[in-house]
Image (cartoon, rainbow, N blue to C red; front, side, top):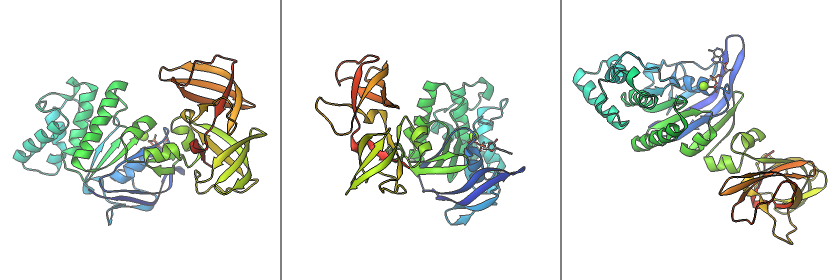
Amino acid sequence: MITVTLKNVSKVFPGGNVVVKDINLTIRAGEFFTLLGPSGCGKTTTLRMIAGFNYPSAGSIFFDDRDVTHLPPNERGTGMVFQNYALFPHMTVFENVAFGLRVRKVPQAQIRERVAAALAQVRLAGMEERRIDQLSGGQQQRVALARALVIQPNLLLLDEPLSNLDAKLREETRTEIRRLQLASGITAIYVTHDQAEAMAISDRIAVMEGGRVHQVGTPPEIYHRPATRFVATFIGKSNLLEGVVDRIDGNRGLVKVAGNLVIGVDLERRNPQVKAIPGNRVLLAVRPEGIQLAQPGEMDNVLAGTVLGVEFGGAYTEYTVGVNNLKLVASVAASEGELRRKNDPIKLKLPPERIYLVE
Ligand code: ADP
Ligand code: MG
């Protein structure tokens, strides 16, 4: 189990393309840590620098107190699972998994034992003599995982390991990977563009965009307290309301949105960088499930609008609602009264405890 630290790491490719911009991260010992962001944001480049397949153009990488910035991959003790698995298709499962041990000149008798143990770990016991091209996608994925684990790495790196699997298998396999990581206690760094996957299995997530880290936090922190507009929209759905701070009274603020609508907010629920000063522009975020139907007679934080769209989802109904020039999405529990129809008037309540001041 090791701690991984990235200090001011940048990567410039020939031609001047800056794809990783001054990243600072600490991945704790035993943590399942995910780099999450859209395609092209620099996740693979960052992971490859941690593995040693690329070197940073600036900055340093530490495994515990050891500076590994310019160490080749085979001297780092990391196991890596690549997006396309990078298995040898005509070789057997045994030979694929044994590869890293042969390179390390492990004695033959030990190799048999360790390959068998690694295959048992990924639930492929007894599959040694199968050829890779005779396996399903899910089985190939597990061979790639066994090959990474067999060298008993101090750090497991996984680059979109589920992208070649269908949806159902993806969900099963991500649970399996998390189970293995918890059982072995190994530090793991996982790369994905899939926010639901990241939320489901990670201890903490770094949300990346354009080579930068926008936010590092636990899944609930990132979901409920997004640090930037990008995070608020990339992770789940958010209603974003641009407003101007009108008045402040202790921990309560009044924000004017869409011209003259006044919304009360709890100023403790804000990004520390947001300056709550009258006249300042702010960005409010509310999740669809944070919006409720207003009770008759309720006045505070109630917005009167018109139903623009209805999507029945069983447990929840999703309403798209027009309020002045705003379009809000509210996800309302089935228990909250009968369905409204398109063009019906509707009153929505935005409880202050569900509003977050993002920027
Ligand atoms: P991600 O894994 O998040 O999809 P990558 O780290 O693979 O993103 O790539 C980030 C950016 O760096 C992309 O714009 C990509 O085209 C560019 N890039 C990746 N590898 C190289 C390379 N070897 N040379 C030049 N540009 C590269
Ligand atoms: Mg990638």
